[in-house]
Length: 331
Image (tube, rainbow, N blue to C red):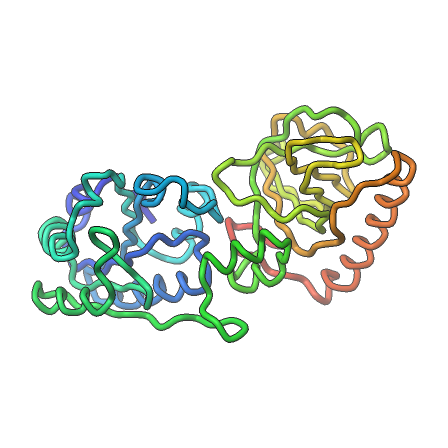
């Protein structure tokens, strides 16, 4: 997989047939993977290649920042997952107010036909394009016939009787329902960030925590305590993984106003300051709540650890090993 900056750069690298997936692909969920898989399959002919065209920043961040959704992945993680899906090229193109003015017909003619000279395009059932999103899949089918490229419209992937969609996944994550969200994503939701200094409260209670500074652009989970799987790169360069309890919230017992992500590793005592952690959320243990004081909180954390270990033994033991291919990590 190769990342290409700008639409005009692609044809400098590849001159043969091009099959292109169009969409935002935030989260690279099961519906997105179906689109990408169809694109890769279309490009199986000799000399052909597959590509994904995505815009950065998210179009709504430019057109209506107040309505721009929190992202499910950082831009870098989205690139990684798209690459794992098997495409040959990822074309990243800046989304500007000027680009947003393109009418659907102009987008098909100027971008798809003249600039990219696509052989085929693959989109989801709810894809929209052009000025104010006026273009729909049926319009793209018509325009493809006019300009000589095929258009494949992919039906939705359904879970619980409704299409998998980034908006549904965001709603589930905001309620802390990480297992259901993971079923739609096809992998466990992840927060990635650097360990920074906190107030040392966890160490004082006997449960040291790593305070993880995550991207402000990525969605914040519903507050609570979660069973998580944490990975990071050790000094020797190899990936290490550990079970953890992770608290997402404001720590109301100590009147903390700003939400934080605090990770307590169950089987490791190590200085992690400055390291980048990848935190995968597997199951919610309990809601965040206020305690009468440190003693009551300490007792609750002990109970949380016991419950977490029981879950690990019952659900994630050697006979029930969970595979999680996102970003190359496994559980």
